[in-house]
Image (cartoon, rainbow, N blue to C red; front, side, top):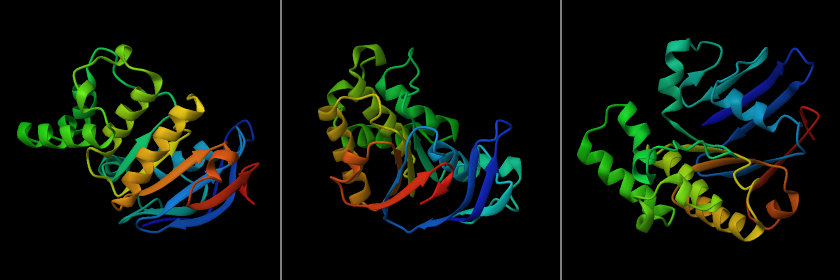
Length: 215
């Protein structure tokens, strides 16, 4: 499904990652654990090909970074869901419209958009707030909307970059429950986090990264 093979990527500052090799199987829940600046976000950006390796290669489904053309990247990303720490919701659109955006971009029909959006919003427990604006929601609810948007296109892999980083422990636990339910239905998840204590309370494979290398 996803493979990173001896991947290296360096930034002009000298930071980056090196010798990163791992794979994610269908249905796995994998935690990428490490302190801030360790290279977690870089790994995720390489998987959704916002960055490309300086050495090594990455395979995502039938796509290989060695042979990728820029015009193929949007098609590859349609197979992924991506959740960020800072939610990235459209402030001028309600919950329904935020979640529907991805489907409209790819040209889904109106009836299918409605069906998928309502299901995704229900999956994250926000059916009763589908017409609320982002500024009417708590931080945890906004993150649930971001997750709904990430799963509405039925990706086979969900990438979550510090999805609980800005949330209190109780709200973070609720987000983890949502992610576990999504994973239980067969969606693979790679979650980057610095919270070792939280990770140890959940099942899943743990990959530890430090100074740009898996340890």
